[in-house]
Length: 87
Image 1: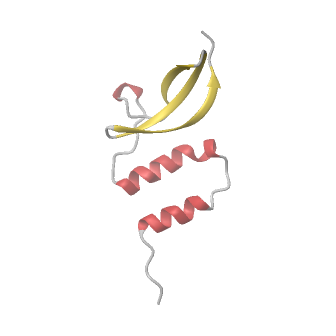
Image 2: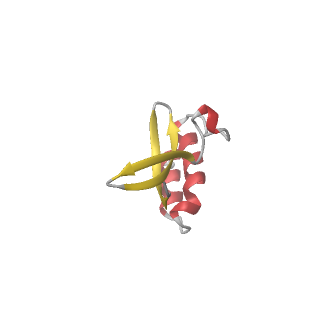
């Protein structure tokens, strides 16, 4: 008899087989990760600072860029979103 898969095993198995693009899967991945970590899911309100596509403007090496983050508690999990912004 093989051991029963844990929720972590199921999560890894599901996402290791993902075929859609990273950007297409990002929000669903974050929702499932929040559930797995037993933390609240991101809201639909930027005001509380805990939402999808929380905008961050970054200026580095003379280049302005926009990134988006999904905060988890006191830390942030961020993924790439390579969009340039002017000004």
